[in-house]
Amino acid sequence: MDIKVETTKKKIEAYDVEKIRKDFPILFQKVHGKNLCYLDNAATTQKPQSVIDEVIKYYETINSNVHRGVHSLSEMATQAYEESRNKVRDFINASSEKEIIFTRGTTEGINLVAQSFGRMNLKDGDEVIISTMEHHSNIVPWQMICEEKNAKLKVIPINENGELIFEEFEELLTEKTKIVSVVYVSNSLGTINPVKKIIEKAHSFGVPVLLDGAQAIQHFRVDVQDLDCDFFAFSGHKIYGPTGIGILFGKKALLESMPPYMGGGDMISKVTFEKTTYNQLPYKFEAGTPNIADTIGLGKALEYVNQIGIDKIAVYEKELLDYATESLSQIEGLKIIGQAKEKSSVISFVFDIVHPHDVGTFLDFEGIAVRTGHHCTQPVMDRFNIPATARASFALYNTKEEVDVLVNGLKKVLEVFS
Ligand SMILES: Cc1ncc(COP(=O)(O)O)c(C=O)c1O
Image (cartoon, rainbow, N blue to C red; front, side, top):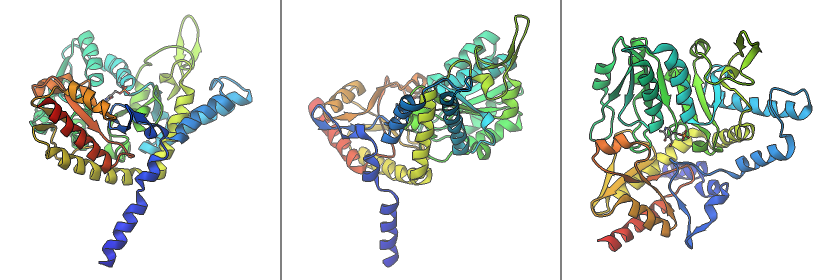
């Protein structure tokens, strides 16, 4: 008995969500006269005060261009910018900061690999493997390069629960496969894919794997060396950082073998009209003046997550997801789309009698922000034969009380529409 009390107490001390919420000023506002209940975190997360302050501080004190000046402001800006790179390296356990490329977001990271690795390696008849549950940003870049190179895009199917069918993946892998590019966590189903198994299998064919980590990085520990992935892309704004900054991790040997994605300043070593040689990693892939302020903001966001502890966040969010799944399952006529055994903080759902857009609009008047639509995963909607879903997605600052607010809001929706 004593032990149980002690454990419960420790748990509360360990994760104080009310204290955490106070770090996010935006959460304390009214929408349509109701307390904001922000459940659209898979689209973007809110920012803690420390991140907001860091971006402002940059502009107030050291705003300057990086890598180009000998004057003090430029040196300080460069140092802060490169410190952020080191923070990212440590956060995902990359072996070197040379493997960390700053991009605008996940979309740009995947396009970079498709246009650089893809253009260099794909030829007539080659194959690229993705899955049915990809975000459009992990479909269209591959379609574009496959079309250009006359290569074939192959798609791993998913089952009724929204899980990848691994045996089908094994069937798709051939000596023609040049890359496998799959999502770690689905943004519309919440499915956590068995990426380690996928990577092991692909590597047994000598095929590299890109992971779209946009919905993974903020929810549980990512260790790129342990995963042994070849590329890993994510966006800063999904992990409490600013928009317009993202990361592409790539294994050094692969990145070194790849041509630049964009040409311009900073990515060169020497330019003459006859020939240009390129800068070393990671700068070879960072042409032009980068998004300095938001890069520094991302570093602060990772620091914030580290202070709370990503493992604690994972445990707390799992509890919240289980509670929300259980609560929403009780609502008559509500069907959850995506019932994988391994899921992260996303619940997509539909009603027989109300269109998801009506659900979203009605909930907004209750102060509840959920996303409705195809979530940039139209093939997932086609797979389940639905036009759209409503989606609640959770972050480290959401509470069980907010889940109750959502449930009550949905009950009101049903009263009005039935
Ligand atoms: C799984 C997944 N991949 C890629 C993206 C694209 O991210 P961004 O728009 O930040 O580039 C998203 C965004 O929602 C996503 O959820």
